[in-house]
Image (cartoon, rainbow, N blue to C red):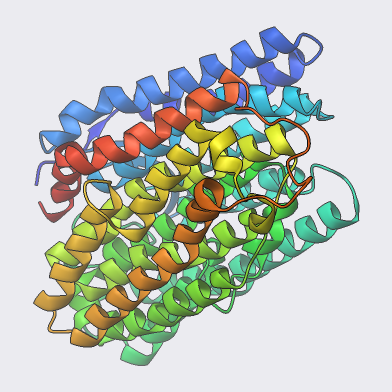
Length: 492
């Protein structure tokens, strides 16, 4: 493996969203100029990240030290194959989400749109910082930035439900980070003398003579402490955050927040502990079975939810654990399947939430039981919903099929037939809570007066983004080579 090359492009990618937030606040009284600043910041972020991709695909790595606090403790940025998977998806979908947000927020005449857009940019500042963190300290710093800057988004409506959802969100995420991740970081530094991530996924950073018990305790603290990953029992913040406007739900579930959680979790699994250490301590299979409970339990809860966003929220809780499950199996195919699900879940889940928002703007309906026959009035929206649902279920040729195929192959490679059963049962449950939504929308007859007011498709500002992300979900299933090639770079 070649030595990393210093690059200030990393700093541009991280700072661009922060500058965007400042410009949004300064231009708040001129909405068109404000949104232009958001677009410019998002485009600059994505452009900077994309410019690193060809070299990373060729096996290059980039690094940028910023500040050193103690020997082995620094704020340093780093770009490798794993970080680019998350950074590319998050920055690109930010651009799409800005367009959707304009149509949604203006369509409903939401208040405090300047604050909303600024906090949105700040959340991406934290997310991109997490993606490019070179060590556990830098990762923790940007992880906390994401938690703090997204609180105003969750509590945006400033009513009782908004404040309760925001309070739960902030308490869960900051308490677990400070109560579990921070002690684990101290333990890691005491045992290893550094917080820097390893250069490869096999070795990790823990010396071979380190106490097995202390390494296991540190590992458990980090898996549970990064509670944005939605693993039960620290998942309750996620459904509670559904009181936020739909663009925030899309940000939480697809673009930034939960992806920061699973990215952070899998980053420390692979680059702090490493495959060899996890295998020697039997941490991988234990983790796989632990998150399997979340996969099945959250799917069963999703079946009971009539509110569309609540059903999608519990679907996210379940789907996030696929990512951790894949990495925990420690076989190449399973690791690839888990990491590519970061991408595939992002495209599908943002489409589902975009559709939920478009349905609400057009019909003011939130519950699935109220959407009978609505698919005939909004065929494009529910068509996109159907495509994204197929991805979540894992039906070819949509992207989710790629994830589940690699996960199944990886589970077989690990000789874990029980995990294969979990994946198959969860697929049936996925179908059970997604298919009825589409079926009722297209084939059920609404009750008299239920659609008394004519309903049509939402405005193009809402419709175009959701159709585009649905298209991306299909394209990523038919042409998975780009991201798979990037992911294979983590094994070099």
